[in-house]
Amino acid sequence: MSLRKAWPPATCIRTTSEEGSVYEFLASAYLAKDDKPAAIAELERYVKAGGRNPDSIKLLAKQLEDAGRNKEAADALNRLNYIYPMDNDQHQALGGLWMNAGNVAGAIREFRAVVAHNPIDPARSHYDLARAYQLNHEPSGPQTNCWRPWKQLRVPPRPKTLAGIDHYRS
Image 1 (cartoon, one colour):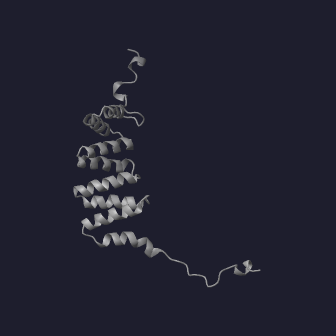
Image 2: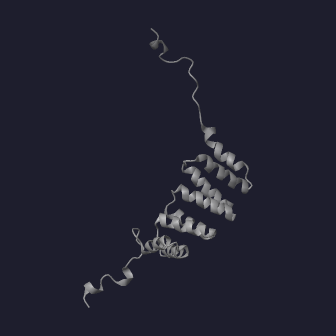
Image 3: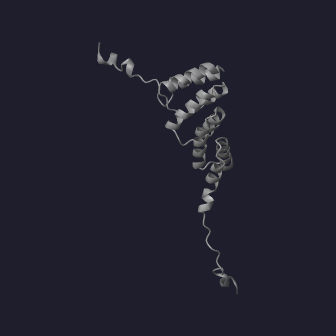
């Protein structure tokens, strides 16, 4: 047997690359056929095999949530925290899932991450964080979090005369 026929060995072939995984391809085909349980199974195999594509993991979490498997959806999004922690939508979704599941401490952590990332809608983020603090019986928590930047704000004193006012008079 020559080296060319034996290379690459079957154990070295990767089935989960970040560009076009077999699992992702099969999951998209199953979703096109509207076979959601099979798509969920393929995406779960992808995650179990070590897949790290954030979009595929978010798709798995969305499909699991639609199927009513909220705990597994939260586990998938929690795994995504270690792969790509800068996604506000993922933190928002995970906080909501944990709030519904009763994991208020985890929801507080996720909503604080959303607030820390300067979201597009800060009112909703602060509201969700305040709700989580309220469920955790910490009524002082949202006030401390929301008003801390305003306490540090210092406004310079107003000048008594306006500079250059004589320049505009003729």
